[in-house]
Amino acid sequence: MLQFPLVVTTQVDVVLVLVSLLAFWTRLSRLNSPNAVVFDEVYYGQFVSLYMKRVFFIDDSGPPLGHMIMALGAYLGGFDGNFVWNRIGAEYPSSVSVWSLRLLPAVCGALCVPLVYLLTLELKFSHLSALGASVLLLLENSLIVQSRFMLLESLLIFFVLVAFLSYLKFHNQPNRYENGRGSSHQQQVTCYPFKDVNNWWIIKDAGRQQLVVSSPPRPVRHGDVIQLDISNREAESESWKTILSEVRLVHVNTSAVLKLSGVSLPDWGFRQLEVVAEKQSKAPSLVWTVEEHRYGTSQEQKEREAELHSPTHIDVDRKISFWAKFLELQWKMLTVKQEDSEHKYSSSPLEWITMETNIAYWLHSSTNAQIHLIGNPVSWGVAHISLLAYQLLAAIYLLRRRRGLKDLPDGVWDQFVCLGCVCVGGWLVNFVPFLLMEKTLFLYHYLPALCYLHLLSPALLEHTHTQLLSRSTHRRALGLCVCVGLVCVYLSYRTFCPLTYGTPELSANQLQALKWRDSWDILYRRR
Image (cartoon, rainbow, N blue to C red):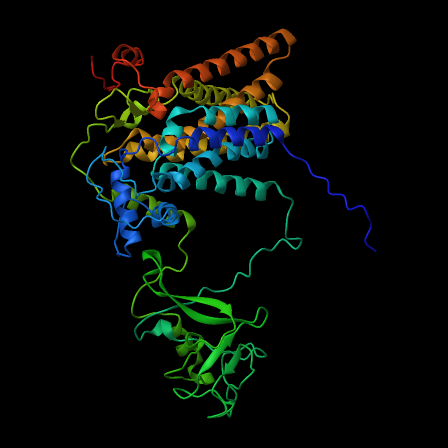
């Protein structure tokens, strides 16, 4: 019986909503400014134009999903692809919706702020630490700049954070499989486009253990398990015959039908044709025919089994591990597209850590208004100090545990280790490969790794506050230092805002004052 009044109760994290709104404001406000091509927009814009014109192309700069997402924004804005992306600084005509071209990267960049908030909570740290991590991302000038233009990094960071959050949510859930099993552990099936011993299938009577057929042989009939659904049996017969019979192979438990997907597997799958299971349909691709069949007698059973397990065409390794596939992929990425030429704003990975480099993204044709990819120096420094502090603290903990001294309860220790695996491990995975590359590298390549350090800093401070400081005076002193640090992060953000948004225009002396590192290339016109 329906009861009145109907009451709905819900809980809203006001802090999460607030930081999310601020993130959208910092990333989406004045998104069509400047109304000119900014740095790598000249590069990615060409791909967007090709998508709009339905022109096929191949690009090895990255997976096509990011380009497709940017093309979606262009499509929603009515962009027809008729713009020549020939130089940085070229003015967009009134017919081009600049806002829509940059919208989806900006939205993904804004969503990274609440994602970091939720990630901190999934790591089992407090809402205060979650707020700190989101504020560090919110006020990171380099992330704001990279989010506000038609560039890929904000999309990459968004999907990486979503993947980590999804994994942690799954990891933190209780066991979903009461019987301890989560997969069928059945065989993978592929096809060769040529005649080969590997194309032979063993059709076995489900009620018999042996492969030897009875005498006289019993034909395979419609409905037998493995279930054969002979689709043209009205014209032929109930028995499965070579060439004449068209069959569908139906999985008994799921009723899914075996079919070719039309896709070839990658190199680790030796370019074999992918076979998948799909819900039953009358599509021709679900129909199979048999060119030849044999049945074995007891005298030739061993010989036939030896033939079936000894492929003659190619030695296929059926047990390629996840790590073998992963390492092969990383090696392909490291060795692709080697470049000999150096770019004016290229840099080395070690220069990213010390903030010795910047990139001039845009300069007004007649004024000193300009946009640079420069990080927030204060939060950048806090991030790398936190990285060193975690490693030092972890080394001390491990040495003491080796001596049988457990400074932390098991639950806290597990939390500390998980923090290192996610944050320090994430930083290493996104930074160390660049040390091995001979490609032309830029500062924006470091931004995914930097996000993990912004996640690490507040959590490490909370660990220090709750586990290492026993006196209230020490805790109050740490709290005061944190407040001062956040104020400095904000002031640093505000100081570099003119170079982040390109407005307001600064004088030559003001721009010179922002050159905190001699290696920074800040441009200005003296008047």
